Length: 247
Image (cartoon, rainbow, N blue to C red; front, side):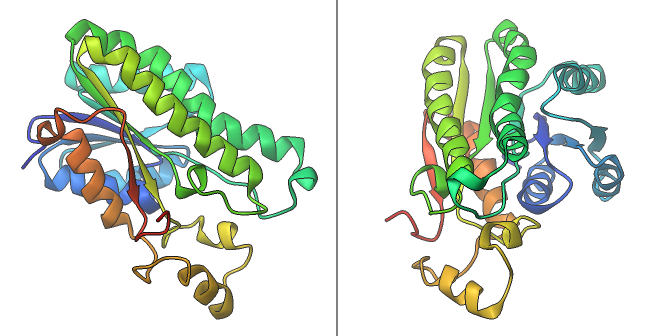
């Protein structure tokens, strides 16, 4: 129960890595706002647990983000933890062929969302002189793959932002970390690989020393530790949860 009595917002919490983080946080005693752009899926996920609240949010929209923060504060009175998990990618393609629409969407969801949530959340956490923010990045931001150039770049932004946030917010008692997962068994897997075939899976797995894709529970375990009081001396770290891919 390492998160007992903690309150947490998890964006993109209805499926994939986000759902794994939701499950682990609730198992560790947290109260969780399951925030997702798919409101029906958020409601379905929240209904699985007693201490979960659903919330429909567009993390790239300032008014929607503020409404999400207001929902959490109204429910609990304060916010201890926020996990910025919502993310998208463009399909694998030569960098010059990715459309401007896809580029804007990747940076809006993967990067602008962190800025917007910080705008709404940081004053609240500063007033309490405590808080934990976890950004879900990617090994793509540490060891880029060809043909995912702008996704790689967005996750490199997330990693740099994490360190910059950690340095600035440390005097206010706020810790900021990131996890960098390798691709896993989530709805985005086929998008990362281009297509999902046994041959492409085998080629992808050959780059991961532990020989398997990451699972939602892997992200939940790492996230729960970094957001718990056990990690009270850890801030600005970019934890690789990648089966050794970045070695």
